[in-house]
Image (tube, rainbow, N blue to C red):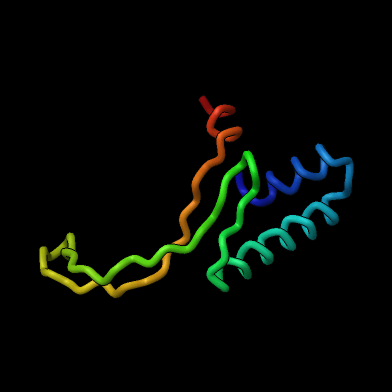
Length: 90
């Protein structure tokens, strides 16, 4: 499923236009991104939660040459599925 499929599904399920669904989805994504940039946790009860975690600098290998390279530290987004979502999948 891609963004267009998701917009189509939202419009159909909510009985709204595709333009309104697109605007709603983009607003949701902007709000989630903004909260994560501020270091906040975003939680949708039953669905899951997003959080930001720090990944330490480490050494890796270039798979083509086998040469050791340094990988910089960075922040990564983590998603943990909620119980309702986990139950729906299993």
